[in-house]
Each structure stands twice: as structure tokens, then as C-alpha cells.
Length: 480
Ligand code: ZN
Ligand code: CU
Image (cartoon, rainbow, N blue to C red):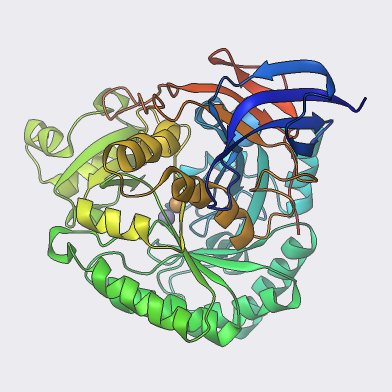
């Protein structure tokens, strides 16, 4: 009689490929799935009766800023409670590693922590730290362009890089990839990268070519009035460097630009038809969240302060109200509140739906751990898609939505043996009730675990059960 350490019976299998759900049992031994089917004949040390509930691959959060959270809060409750088993960190140009700077600590680096948290000059330093005390989730790391830039251009980054500086960045990127980074991210809309030329990034992205499956992800240069040109720039970078690209948290921000995802997606589709490898990610909210900068205010209908170092008493308040109380403009208030984070209401629901339903779009939270009053996407991105856009609005089928959270993500980022329920694959899994799964976190009360999740497994070990984190920390540092 075959044996396994865990058998899940009566499961509705949603395997992550986008194919139709089916009923089966799953056998798991150590960290892998060994068989899926009618497994009455299996003897198991432990059995879970899924009772018809869904079992899918664990969700892959392709857009995170969890670099320091993985080390500081290794239980990762805000991720495992919503079914996330792997996070891609180092997005938007800022990675905790590799980073080395003596001088200025510019925005948006405070999104990842304080300057004293940046203690990983090499990716191997970060990897060693993670592997010595792993988190509950797996992590794959992107090297941040701004991180590379700040090191190479310590004397000031408000200009294009000189050749020697570019060479330094290339060498650092190459080392980062050798030490396990899966690609390069940029945040071209942020101070440390605003002045970088397209050519600088093309040259840097060419380094990715020397590595199999290394990818380029970008918070593009402009998500507002210049969004179409910014998408074009990302496509040019991918094309000239012959690299697969991901356009991060795609949006058309600012009321003037509502509806323009018709144009941006048409441009992306055309590039794909011409053979370019392009993917996108999106989070299911019409409000964004990032550092509080005066120049970001113009394109928002409403701004909520999510944290402020000098004025923590203002956390959770509207910037407009604070400005009124302080008898100054919103921009002046923003300056007084800095370093600070904010939530910007600046998107159109129709754009969001159009982007989410685009076949190459994955789900990524862009959650910001460590904020006093975080955007609810940190805790609730995945269940919100399943409740609001699958069950209520029927924008996606359940199988399509799960594919955008698992199979498509693993394929795009080349995460080997993950993202599907398949014999031989890692046992990263989530058991949930598709009829009741619900995001309880909202803007008023953003730190709420998901309703309707039974349990979550990473590499065969339960990390979330009975509505709480377990003691297991089975996360691995993933590399190509
Ligand atoms: Zn970003
Ligand atoms: Cu981001």
C-alpha cells in the first residue's frame, strides 16, 4: 500500500493551469505532491477531508515589497492568511539587497524600512540571512535599479549615469543574478531613477540576457498623463535588450486618464503579436499607495495618510482635512508629514476590470507591510479578486482567476515546479471555500485575515490553520 505524509480527500482541484476544476484526492510526501486522483488505497500519516472545498496552488504574489518583512515578521500573517505561499520582492526599483550607500536615503526607500535595515550589500548576504531563519513563505528577489544606482552614483543620482557608473551597476547586477536574483526591477517614477535615460536601462537589461529566464519588471516612468509613452518605453527596453518584461501594477491614474487602458492594452497586445514577451500585474483596488510626495497629489481625487514619521497622530486621516486644520496647501502639508506614506484614490473601475481580465495580467498585491494604517491590498488582494471579480461580478471564472494567481505567475517568473497542482511539483497549496471566501480588510480596518480559507501549505508544511499562523517556517529562497 503506497504511503504519504499527508492526504487531502474530496477536493475540488483547481490546478492553476486555467483548466476546469475536477474532483480528486491529493497525496503529499515531504515537500512535494506525489499523486492526484482517487487515492483510497493510500495510507497517510495525516488526512484532511476537504469536503468539496477548493484546493489550488498557493498564490504567488508577484508584486511585493516584503524584503524586510520576511526577516522581521517571518510568520508573514498578512500573506499566508490570504493564501499566498510565494512572494516576489525587490519591486519598483528598490530592493533591500544588493544595497550599499553612505549618503542620502531617498524616497521611496523608506517603503522598505529605515536606513539601518539596509545591511545587505550583496544578495548572498540576504539569502544567507533568509536561509538561516526562513519565513513562512518562499521568496524570489529582483535586484532594484534604484538600489544599484544609489550605490554606483553615491555622489548624486539626479542625472544620467556616466559610463563608469553604468559599468559598476552592470557588474553589481551580474553578481546579484549569480547570487540568486531572478531579474531586475525599475521604479522610473521615483527620485533615484527619474533622471536615468532609457539607454541606461537598456544597457543594464542586456545583462539579464546572460542568464536564463531573467526578467525585467517596471514601475513605468509615468502612470498618469504620460502613461502611453511610458508603456512604449518599457516595450522598447524589453525589445532592445531582448528580455521578457512585466509592467507592474498597471493603471491609468488621474481622472483625465480614465479609460486609457484601452490604448495601453492595445499597444501591449500589438507588441505581443509581434513576438514580444510582455506580462502585467494588477491589484484589485482603485486606490494606489506609496510614499507621500507633493507631486503625486495632483492626480488623486482623495489622499489618505497611511503613516507619518513626524506626525503619527495624523495616520489614517485625509490629507485635505489635515491641510485645512493646518491652514496650508495639501502640498505643504505633505512636506510637513514626510517621511510618510499615503493612499491615493486615482483610478477608474472600468480600467481596473479591463486590465485584470487581460489574458497576460497576473495578480500582485503591491502591499506595503509596516505601514501604520496600510492599504488593505496588503492583507486582502487575493480574496478580493475571488469574491468581488469572480463570485459577484463574474469578470473572471474561478479557474481563470486562480491561473492569474498561480500558473501564469510561475510561468512568467520561471519559478520551477511551482504554480500548478501536479505530481512532482512542490506542495504549496491553499484550501478554501469558493462560495464564502471574502476579503474582510478594508480602508478603515485594513489588517483583517481572509474569511473562507481552511488552510495554507508551503513546501508540504501547514503555515496557516484554524485561522492562525502555525509555528512552521518552511519558506525557500527561490532561484532559477
Ligand atoms: Zn511601484
Ligand atoms: Cu511596488
